[in-house]
Amino acid sequence: MMKLASTGSSLLLVLALVSVFVSGFGKRIPILSFDEGYNQLFGDDNLVLHRDGKAVHLSLNERTGSGFVSQDLYLHGYFSASIKLPADYTAGVVVAFYMSNGDIFEKNHDEIDFEFLGNIRGKDWRIQTNIYGNGSTSVGREERYNLWFDPADDFHQYSILWTDSQIIFYIDNIPIREFKRTAAMGGDFPSKPMSLYATIWDGSDWATNGGKYRVNYKYAPYVAEFSDLVLHGCAVDPIEFLSKKCDTTSQSLELSATITPSQRSKMDSFRRKHMTYAYCYDQTRYKVPPMECVINPKEAERLKKFDPVTFGGGRRHHGKRHHHGRASRPEADTI
Image 1 (cartoon, one colour):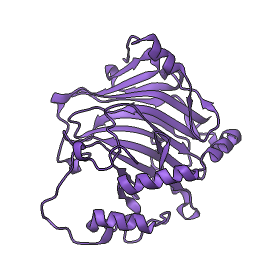
Image 2: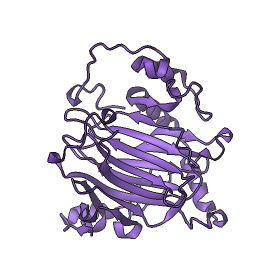
Image 3: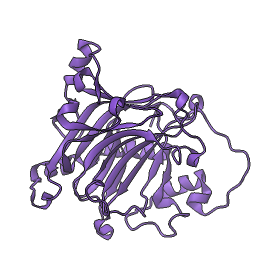
Image 4: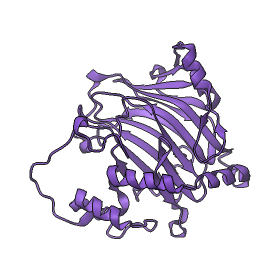
């Protein structure tokens, strides 16, 4: 069973009780304690509560990973957590903060993912976003990015805004990806109630260089820290959700989903400097881009230069490749 750790200091508790302001909502959204909104999913003692349940530590060791899940299912909403990732050698480790209904709709599930992929010592964590609707797992909608900071040094806020018409991913309140619903997608846009999950697990078979580098348990336990947990949405019954009215919540979310010119500028800068993969431009997987893709010529050209085989139909050269560690990360302090 999960453990409850003692409170570190009264100051931390006061800070944990303060509501956070979410840009775009125009109001304060309360931070939940673990017991107010979540249940343990798996991991026994590998899930530990801190600061009177305002923070959660998930750990991975040789025995098991761990995770938690929201008590309710939601039809649209804003979902957020501040996360600090494990440090040092983390190859093969996967930390996920995501929404899914795969336990209820096994053959036509929806999913909205933040995935953090560990790396060997001296190499950076990578972040991946993905979206599935109506079981459309054959169409991977991944994007991958490097970050302008070390996510193991401190907490950073990762957020998902899901409305009836679009999905926006945020890091520290900066939008990094906007995914809009189109008529051509049909049911491929997530449209059924989902739970929120957070997990840490062993993804050695694929997470780092396609499985070349695996989890090394001499560095265990790997601990991912979560705090500032936000569940702001319309809680519904998974069976009767079609008759559930979420008008007030949906209207406020649609208003908040407007990306301001300043936010758009920051998003464009992030994608220009830090995006390393986008499925819409992957010519090895899709001869014709999936129907929802809107091709940005500047993104296409930049990714083609980054990887001409994947994004431009070029031929791979097998010469020596140079990699950069944290010390030489370009533009490391900016987006």
